[in-house]
Image 1: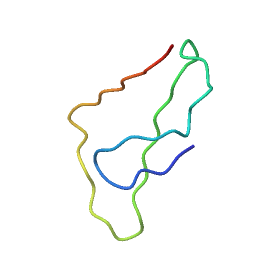
Image 2: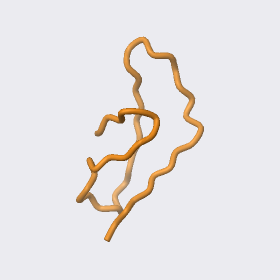
Image 3: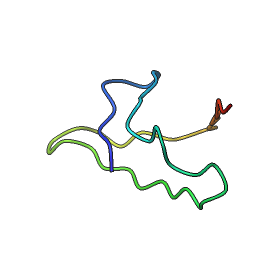
Length: 48
């Protein structure tokens, strides 16, 4: 798991992981925050 700092961004948290493995998303909001509607997602994987 990795926390995101905002609605957009990037992370190195998965560096070294296999790109062929499953990736699951689970969202939570801090207590008291209003619901957010997710309208789209994009994952870009850079590999060598």
